[in-house]
Amino acid sequence: MSGITGGLAVLGLVGGAISAFGTAKAGQEEKEMQDYNARLADNEALIVEQKGILNEVRARKALKTATGRQIAGFAKAGVKTSTGSPLEVIADSIANAELEMAIDRFNIDTEASRKRSEADVRRTQGRQVAEHAKIQAGAGLLQTISKTGIQLSKEKIGS
Image 1: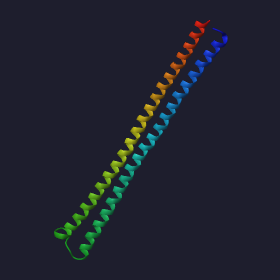
Image 2 (image 1 turned 90 degrees about the vertical axis):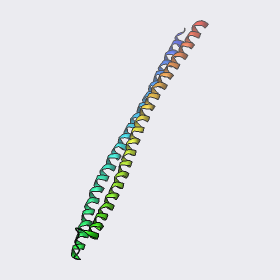
Image 3 (image 1 turned 90 degrees about the horizontal axis):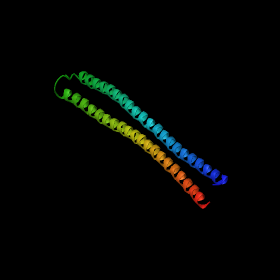
Image 4 (image 1 turned 180 degrees about the vertical axis):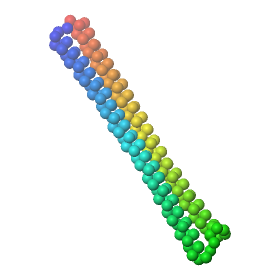
């Protein structure tokens, strides 16, 4: 084996190692990006939940105000609110408001769950990409070593 052949073999191995490192690094960077996007989705889920809590507080306050107005209106008209139709009207208003709040809570919970699922998918994709890149890097390095070994053995047999 000549000095040139040995030098080329070393350069081939170094090039293969650099390529393998670059492949693994690219996979790790993709994983980091997916992890970042997952954190964003988790934060969006928290924001959705906080918004839901604030909306419910606001709705309960509005319900209290509306119920107070109904009671005041009935009282002003001289109608007793403790029995009969006025009580049924007030109870119906409260039930409708509670139903709307329950629907809103369901929608909020569904949206937050969707965001958390998105975060989980992104984390999984990031791990898969990083693992795939490591496998590709290792395979590429082994292929480079194999090709270099074959070329060196041909040189040795030919000389």
